Length: 82
Image 1 (tube, one colour):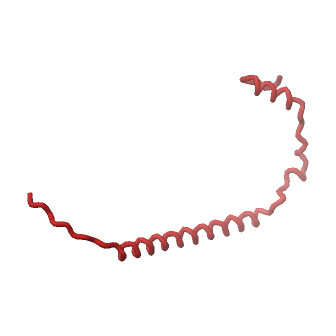
Image 2 (tube, rainbow, N blue to C red):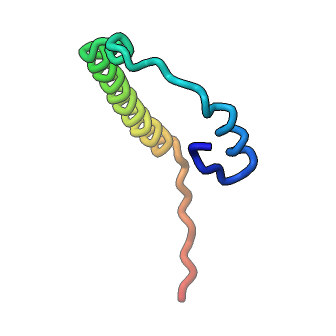
Image 3 (cartoon, one colour):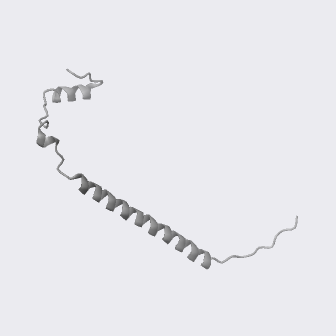
């Protein structure tokens, strides 16, 4: 075995995959199938959407707090003299 296995399962996996070879070292395997600009555009759109979401959530929280504060009924209790 080329790799030292720590337990029985690792030893079985090493034996199973010891002779496997990977054939992805060609020029075609090293080229990206997606353009970098497309990835950056998608990431930018996602971040803009998430910023908008956070803005809406923040405004909704403020609105809910103000509605709850206006509808709260406060009662005044008499203080006990010390």
